[in-house]
Image (cartoon, rainbow, N blue to C red; front, side):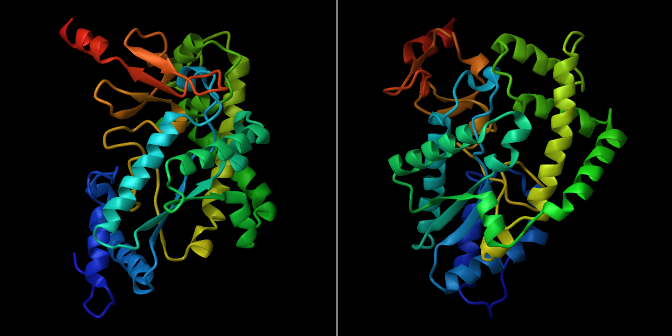
Length: 337
């Protein structure tokens, strides 16, 4: 694919786009990306930044809070090595872009925790602690030139986007969706995902893991009717907030020359690997690990806690592990056993 020759820096833009859509960084398949349709717009966006000699820009809605699910993250509420590994991945992307375009890349992280936290039972104070700790990890990784943290609500205000008058309409649409789609594959998937996001810290990790397995069919076993009602209510509330995010998105106004990336493969959108290629679990949905070969990965807490081949390592003044490191000896024994 080639940009029109009359456009400035077209070749540089093509090289940058080739980096962004390379398999090391692109999460979705090429058919999902649909490059023939979205590629020209991406090239045009890149060219506007390159013409001015500015770093190219990506935006990403991400890192809302550590999901309050003991089966996923244990008791951790702050970012851990999973988030740190993601920041390192962003630095690798910046370095790859710099090799073809020296000004490099800026990745603007839009924290949306304050928008959706209440839906899942997370207090604003916890969300702000998470965001502050994430910013500290960015500084620790010496990545402040590439990772820029933004607050979604603040950007909405900056862009003069106020969803208040639309909330009644969005609420009605969400309730209609819940009723009409109930029992469909989409509804069941949303039920399962919503349960996984809820604040379930009062329950044991083993029980939560069992409930999550049941939730794939769109309901919970007998005896958990109150929790199921919480899931139903959160499904509707999140549907409203998701509509707010998409219908009152400040990114086109605040970042008119940015490519708006995603964390999940979506048709026509650039989805990026958050930790490394092949690691799909999002950092805030799991715990950070180092395998026996020193590679970063994200895993559900129930798959790591209590294992003989993983050693939890905590930072000073923290009572939950920052990283789980696999023993080379134990890994070798598991491989040969």
